[in-house]
Length: 116
Image (tube, rainbow, N blue to C red; front, top):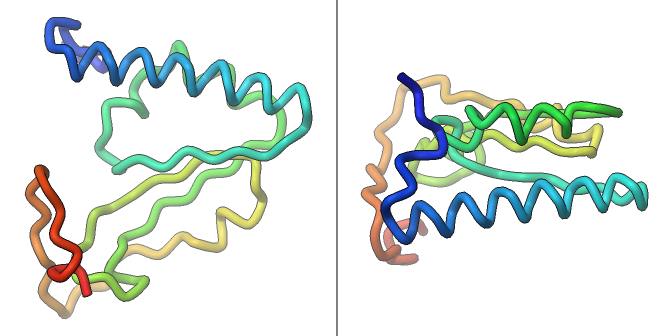
């Protein structure tokens, strides 16, 4: 059974769920003010599976893009999805075409020198 909210037993998981709820409220308030917004998460993030929160945001003009960072000069692929109210988002669809190595990202602390 899919549990995008998790089991709610880890502090970081609870915090992530609280932040997601707050982001949805913020997006809804920005919609009322007709102010654009965008969310970015890895494409495999559980956030995209929380349909009871994400679905209401699909009302009105809604745009989505998915891209791999290597297509924009980074050494890693990290497929990423962005949703929001900006029509230009679709222009950034760009998936890896292969033919090169990727730096493997492994959570934890990030060393910027590895990304340059």
